[in-house]
Amino acid sequence: MDKRKIILDCDPGHDDAIAILMAARHPKLELLGVTTVRGNQPLNVTTNNALNICQWLNIDVPVCAGLDRGMVRPSPIGESIMIGERDGSGLDGHTFDPLTKKLDSRHAVDFIIETVLDSDTPVTLVPTGPLSNLGMAIRKEPRILEKIDEIVLMGGVYQHGNFTPAAEFNIYADAEAAYVVFTCGRPVVMMGLDITRKALCLPSVVNRIAKIENRASQLFVNLMSFFNRSQKNTFGWEGAPLHDPTCVAYLIDPTCIETKEMYTEIDITGGPSHGRTNCDFFNLMTDKPRNSKVCINLDVAKFWDIVEDCIKLYN
Image (cartoon, helix red, strand yellow):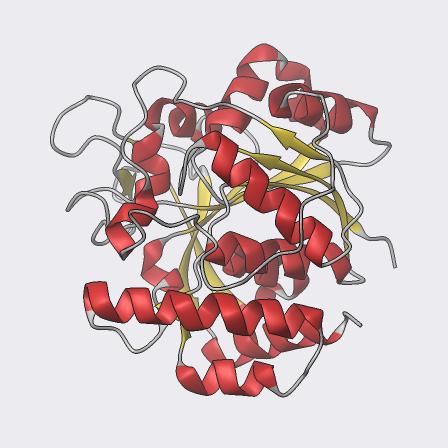
């Protein structure tokens, strides 16, 4: 079976850490590299976090730093402040070894372009943070589009936002980049808050993963125990939603998530709904092409089985 080649573009982040963990070892996937962007934290922090995750799990792929701001507008305050980590690292809860893994010297945008163009088979792009790197790569070198198999992203919402009443953070953080991605003509799968909020890492899940007893489960338990506490203090939830790993779970087993094709338009007007993913759920705008698969339901039990299976792949 041919592995699906992917690039994970992220802003670690507790949930990004688990997405990296899942993507790096599963036999259905070939992780070509990890690129970082400003999002959960400033770029230097998200990049350092990605290096720490890869080193802890012995993931031998390039890590490349990307854009430290949006393509057009100033970047908003980091998402982590909304979840009670104002003074945190974005990966609080786990103690990493002294960092020795080196950052790849290539800019993330150039790495994406070079890797996609050099691949002998199409590449799937998996952005789980603001879409700045991917939007810039498409604008800089449109030839990559013909070699992109699919874009499976975490972002957006067709119901209620988490950064503004209208908008989800990743899309709001660089709405212009999101506009580029959603209008690029390649297949887009949108993992919005509508389904990622169902992926709650309840204490029962943490206890289940703790029984595996390897480095990956240790990382998961430490990160999620802290993440759960911060989410409970902020929102009163018993478990933190594990947003970003839904993208990887979908790539491993698409049957765990139900999608619906619809037209999605990104609000880049700068008004109170700036950054909203306006999803034509009932396909009322019949003159608009359906440019995205929007995820509308998650098989929670199957999702956690996939996460557990990925963690068991580590020594």
